Image 1: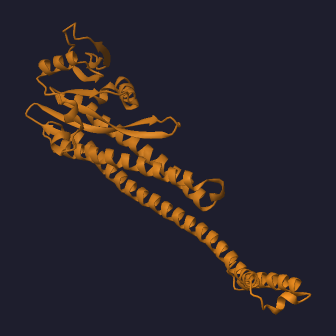
Image 2 (image 1 turned 180 degrees about the horizontal axis):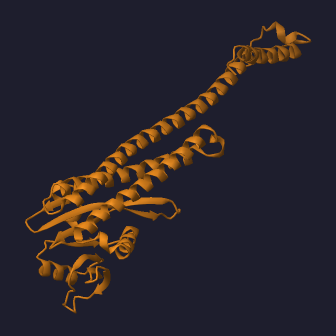
Image 3 (image 1 turned 180 degrees about the vertical axis):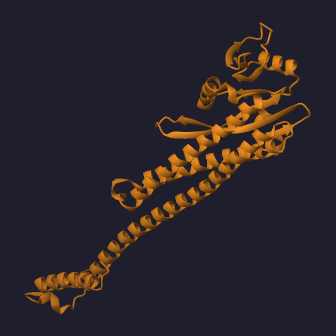
Length: 323
């Protein structure tokens, strides 16, 4: 489906749904959004605007030359945008989906194969404030600005979840199993890395875009400000990864402490049972000459000695603070 935003004569922006069968494009196009485009639609745009639309393989390559390139008439950007999805357990997942941005003749073309809320928000902004959008570069500028704001919101949410997780580890660990805590930490680490990859990708694209001579000074100035915000998000993201590593270290230490307590308990129990076990072993031997076997009070005396030999090590351990 092709969705076209055009600038009308009275300065407003109009949204149109275009079919290639009509073969008549409107005038003053700002932005052409291609959602799940067909091969026929891709070929039509390619021939109509002399664009070299990247293939699916080219869109996913990680080399800088595949993420951003520019010629005399057009700019092509393949940028990772985060997409929120939920798994079968209703847990949040972030997926980096590649969106292709192309500009030529002051028109922005976006090629995507998933629905993103940011596009709905951009549509609302363009229709509500048409004076802020004179050409496709203005739309591209605002698109990156809004996306960085969304990434900041995601990082803030991750930070809140990390704080809750730290409290659970330190204060409420009895209410959570260690398996669940480790899974929550791993999940937040994965989300953080997804955000980091997306931020790095957009930073490369915006840095290259600022150097282009096809955009005006106002857009470059705004992109520079957005880039500074993005760099601060990268620093926050790195700090957040360190925080999660610290929480994981604390949890691992607590697991070790709990294991040491269990090992200490079994060690004390073993040590306490060694003297009575030794006594029982001695009098369990089948020698003919064992005077104690003929004692009238031999059995109760041995039982008492075994009880005392069990209690005595436990009392010593408690006195020394080992229990």
